[in-house]
Length: 116
View 1 (cartoon, rainbow, N blue to C red):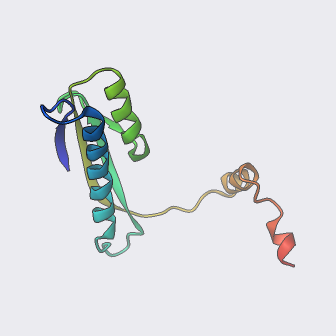
View 2: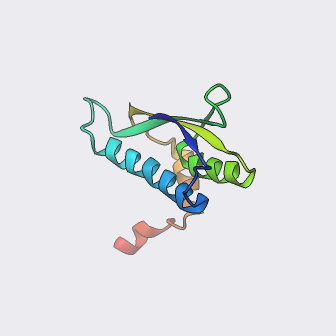
């Protein structure tokens, strides 16, 4: 999806228009994730760009797209450009030290003792 969204359309309430745009983006992501995966892929990953125009669009993480939209609205932008391109992704195994940090951060340490 490569699209420039207008935030000020005559006859439409700006807040309702913003929610409709976010809904369209989420609907597109859901539809793309339902597609069959290619051989060797684990999930659908997305290359994302965001900017006020297509020429000024910068690479952003998928989780930050909605935040970027909210920031553009807060800065009184009249339009913004979003590019979401699906690509097959392959999960990589975490290094042992990083996995231990993740467990400690999320309180998962010692769960094996409970199962014995």
